[in-house]
Image (tube, helix red, strand yellow):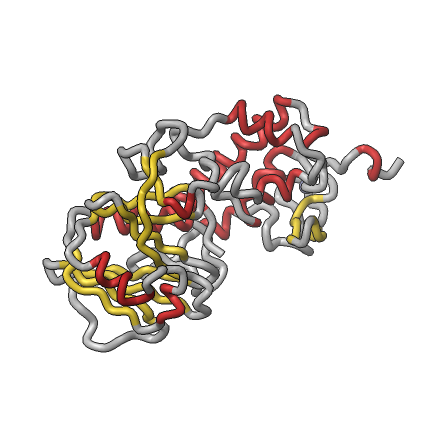
Amino acid sequence: MPELPEVETIRLGLAGRVVGKEIAEVSVWNTRMVRTQPGGAQEFIYLLEGAKIQAAVRRGKFLWLELDDAKALVIHLGMSGQVHAWDEKPAERRKHEHIRVEFTDGTGYTHVDQRTFGKAEVVDLVPCADGFPGGRGSKMPMMPASATHIARDPLDLGFNVVTVARQLRRSAVAVKTLLLKQELVSGIGNIYADEALFACGLHGSVPGSSLTQKQAVALLEAAQQVMRAAVEVGGTSFDSLYVNVSGEPGYFAISLQVYGRNGQACHKCGNLILRENIGGRSHHYCGTCQRLPRRSRKA
Ligand SMILES: [Zn+2]
């Protein structure tokens, strides 16, 4: 599933290709992709045709296009969603192409989704409670009504590392699970949670409440650093499911320290990278470099 760096890469691609354009025509081939639009595909198309795209915005893993009528086109990538921008209209519908948006200048984009866990919807923009822009790429303190439960992400201008660190420390839940809670801090998924924990030498099962404020801040800053580095190289592609709007993969996989490396040697100490389950998600860690909670540590 795309996490912040992958969605940011897609957002950057869209920002350069679709912002300022007017939508001429919209095609929906699979109505499952607009299943949350109250009026279905017909309403989805009606609301989009003639609208102008003002900005490509992201908060966490949430991506939307700001429209000129206080609405937003929200693009949920799900597990296998891809957005392909094109300069010339493809002659035929491509495999798994469910939605096509054409602009008045003849360019457009295609929303492809192999497993159709993703979707698209047109929703109202509502004011942000904290007055900061809705997300990266926006100048307006507005966000889609369907995304107001999503917390600010570590790369957001409005992200307050001190406040979020305090919130992390208020919970006795495993810190790995807390990092994945999009209502607490958004954008971090399994890959970058494991990488941030490794960078701080913390085991994912450490309860949030056992962290010092300094440790909690360091952990969030590590998440910032690893995700910034991943954005630089276009995110992490493990399979052909994640590519940017030009169809190219990201190159962060070679920089991963623990995620997906179970059974291999730790780059820091040479011992084995292990994997275990925390809160239903796999946690990759170095048994030597990452400290376990005191009570479960062997004497
Ligand atoms: Zn190690």
